[in-house]
Length: 144
Image (cartoon, rainbow, N blue to C red; front, side, top):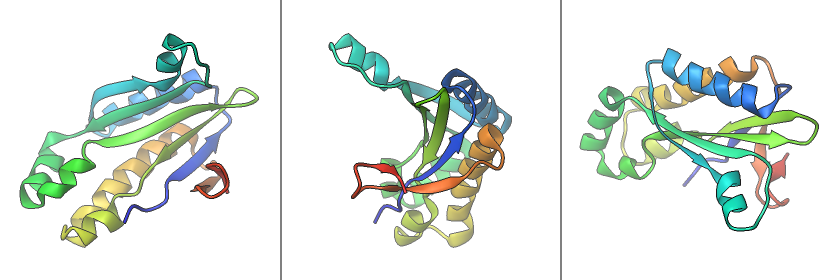
């Protein structure tokens, strides 16, 4: 079972939040493998949406042993973080907690918890003490 997404609102403009997230990933010893630009894909197809990017990142030295031990974890690795534009030149960053799901797959608790700690550290770098909320999937996906 997937845990609800954790989303933090920031007072930063989208581009600043995106740049800070990318720097924080590098600072944490992680590699950015891909950046998915959903807004560009929408524009390319005649649609519009606020700036929305997913950064795919990780560290093979951390993820590979977990995937070798529990191959189903490869469905959710590398890690991902969402940076999206909110009205009023604000932005939000979000991630899916992995620890609970990884534990259900048989990953040891202390190993599984490291993945969430890394994700939270990156989000904290982006927005410091900004408020946290879980996604309300029954209310159109808005912050609860």
